[in-house]
Image 1 (cartoon, helix red, strand yellow):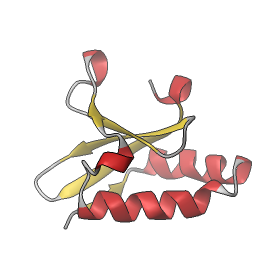
Image 2 (cartoon, rainbow, N blue to C red):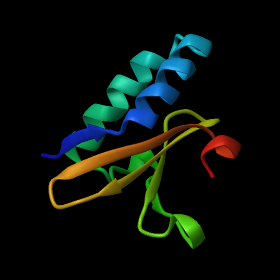
Image 3 (cartoon, helix red, strand yellow):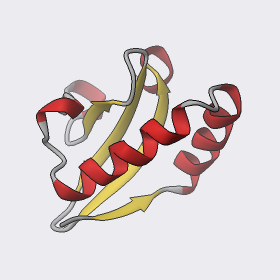
Length: 88
């Protein structure tokens, strides 16, 4: 079981996102539960990033929305949330 550590910038982005897409909040809560249990669960479509984001991972919140995170021993550090173009 992993711990979740949302960075302050992530929290600001999430607040704006949930205001724009209020129906996404429930999906986000489900995604966080999956990340806690297994960050590489198939339904999350987690994949390693390359280039300037090397060492980080992305997973899908919806078809359009992504979450960028990094992993440490027992923690998922949430870094960024938004559309594909916003987070990459």
